[in-house]
Length: 317
Image 1 (cartoon, rainbow, N blue to C red):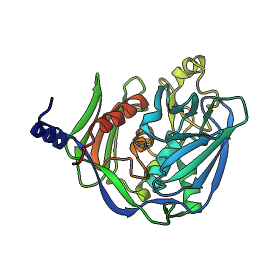
Image 2 (cartoon, rainbow, N blue to C red):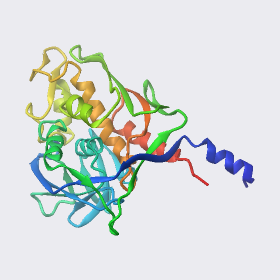
Image 3 (spheres, one colour):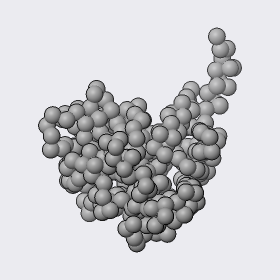
């Protein structure tokens, strides 16, 4: 049994604490609706984003089943992030959640449906492979202060990193260092693909304007020689050169031009922000206030990192 002094030492050793941001929670000023083909299933799906009360956070409504956009419901899946609850699944949520987190949509009901009434899973549309369409739609409809059911505004909280936190596997790692603002430094390495190679990108620091201009337009990418293998796994049924950058080991980019010389690395940051958004709770900020350095991450490592953050939250007295 822990004696009181040991309990206090345990509390103070936690690496994450929640603190006010000095801002109020927001939601959409109105509803917006977009539809399009999905990357992996190839089916057309429709998404309607609706304003929500403060403190409700972001959640999906699929056939009247409510699935919070929370790490508690994330499951490992190939090449995307999937949320699952009571047998219902929402796939490829990362681009939408990335845009909502970065643009300040703290509370939102996300209604989603596809063309098959019998499906127990649905996938968010891929559009051009970036988050640009979501950012544009959010910018067009605008934001407003979110109020709770009593008509009160709620302060927006954020997780602050007090001590370094890390996860790693082989030569891949994610580590968060204490910092006064959000900053992400991300590295990728594809030595077998010369036109991608080793790239690094850093936000300086991250805000909604920087995200909209420098991160959101970056598109998902794949290696041409791996396409057949992914198709054999039942993936990328809706993939095309219209919604992904394709790079060949020997021939280089199949569908240039790139929007940025380091577009693949920037897209990894886009994905990472979407996965970090799963740390949000009750309308709070999901991205930790920290300098996060990542190298050769992916969705599985991203969500593992968020789970590790959840285990290191300081328990206040």
